Structures are given as C-alpha cells and as structure tokens.
Image: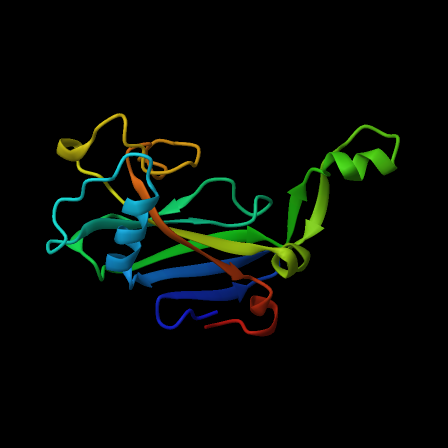
Length: 182
C-alpha cells in the first residue's frame, strides 16, 4: 500500500509468520494542519514560529490482535515538511489471538475465551491508523493547553498530554491481501 510516497507497507511471508515492513516516509500539509489545530483547541496552542515549523512525529497503530502498542518515529524538528524515512519491521503470526466481544459472547452462553483468528481475516477488516503529532517543547508547555482529546500515554511509547494531534489517516489493510508491496 503506498499513500502517495508518504508511507509504504510491504509483506513478506514464511511458514509460521508474515513480516510487515511499514515505512513512514514523510508528511505534507502540516502548516494548514497547525492552523486548524490551533483553532480547534480550547486554549490556543502556542507554536515556536509559523516560519520555523513544528517538531513532527508519527504514531502508527495496527489492529489490536496484531499489535497493542503504538509505533512511533523520532521527532523531526522545525519543519512543515518532515522527512522521516523511518521503517518498522514487524513480525506477525499467521493466526492472532482474539478475544470475542461482549456481543459475540451474548449469542453463546459460554464464558468468553481467546480464539485464533487468521491473519488474512484481521487484514481484511483492519486499518493502519497513522497520527501526525507536534511535540510541544517544554518551554512552550502550559498545563491548561492540552494538545488533544485522546488518552495520554508516555513519550517513550507515543504522544504525551502536552503534544498536539495535527492529523490522522486510516489506511485499509485489505489491499495487502492483493498486493504484497506498495
């Protein structure tokens, strides 16, 4: 799957697993995203300079049966057109553990238990979610100006409560079943 040279996803398979190579290449249109994010915040966000750019990074999420943690690039400082050129090599099992939802258990009177779901099924209905964030420097941080409505989590794993969400894109993974590279 190729998103106009912005991201790249490739699958390689063996007998027991599939390797997913996820490339986060670059981001575009961030100057407009900053203006929209500034307007939508309860307290306007303060950015270093409209000319200097932002400190951008990307947090990517795969469907939960595949990976529970977020994949996070390093921040690229002071630009509106960051070049990440970052690749994640992720090993995926051919079948993933999936706990049924409450609606699934309601039809069966047995207690919910984990079951194996084929990787193809997860890919057919799953989406890769990529979020572009501005890493707010500590000098600009003010507790009243939260950067997003999302649940905060530690910077080592992804965005902190002071970082500002600038945009999000969802990429259907079903294309990986037809094309192994893109």
